[in-house]
Amino acid sequence: MEVVIVPDARTGGELIADAIAALLRRKPDALLGVATGSTPLPVYQALAAKVADGAVDASRARICQLDEYVGLPPGHPESYRSVVLREVVEPLGLPASSFMGPDGSAEDVQAACEAYDAALGVAGGVDLQLLGIGTDGHIGFNEPCSSLASRTRIKTLTEQTRRDNARFFDSLDEVPHHVITQGIGTILDARHLVLLATGEGKAQAVADTVEGPVASVVPASALQLHPHATVVVDEAAASKLR
Ligand code: F6R
Image 1 (cartoon, rainbow, N blue to C red):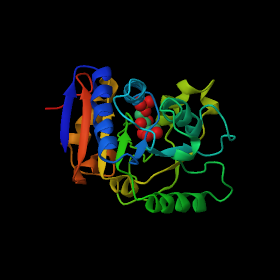
Image 2 (cartoon, rainbow, N blue to C red):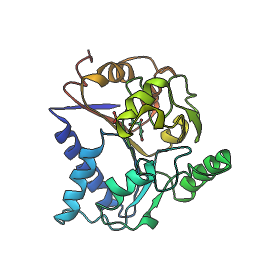
Image 3 (cartoon, helix red, strand yellow):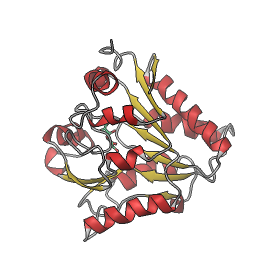
Image 4 (cartoon, rainbow, N blue to C red):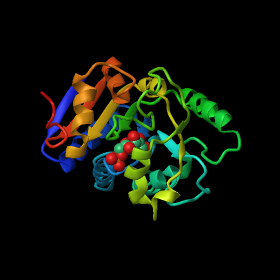
C-alpha cells in the first residue's frame, strides 16, 4: 500500500485526477468506479476541468457506482445514481449509457445485487476504484464487521453513518436505513484502489486502515491485502499516522 500525504483536499483531488487521466490515455474505455459523499468531489471537479481544457479525452470512459440507497424513489436527488450523474457523468460530458449502478428500487434486491456483480464482470472489471472512508472505517457501505470476502449485497447503515449522511437530506428521518453496496471482496477485485481521506475526522480511521491489523472491524484495512492500493490523505487526515 502506498500512502501519499498532500497539503489539502484540492491537491489530493488534482493528484487523483492526474492518475485517472493517465489511465484514460492508456485505456480510453477504462471502467472507473466512483464513490459518493463529499470527499471525492475535488477529484471529479479536477477531472472535469482536464476534460474541458482538452488535457484528456474521457469520451469513452465508463463509470460504475459503488453503492446505492435502497427505497428512494427513482430520480430522488440524493439517490447515488442522481449524484453520480450530476457530479461525474454530466460534467465529463458522458452519455447516461456509459454509467452503471445497482438498482436500489428493485423489488428483488438480492437479485439486483447478484446482477450488478455479474454486470461488473461482463464489463471486464473495474480498472480504478475511487473510495472514501467513513469515520468508522467503512468503505462503500461495508460497515464494521462486514466480511472481507463479501460480494455486492444489501446492508443496514449504522446510526453513525445515517447521522453523518443526514446533511444531504432535510432530516435524519429521511435517510434510508438500507443500501446496496459492493462487497469488500467485490471492491478488492478492482485493478487499482485509490482511497481519498481528508479532514481530522478521518484521522483515526486512516491510522487503523494503514497501520492497524487487517480486521473486519475496520473494513478499509482490507486495502492492505490489495497489490495496488493508494491512500491519499491530507495533513489533517494523516495526523494520527505514526
Ligand atoms: C459512498 C461511500 C462512502 C463514503 C464515506 C465517506 O459512496 O462510498 O463510503 O465514501 O461514507 O463519506 P464523506 O466523503 O461524505 O465523508
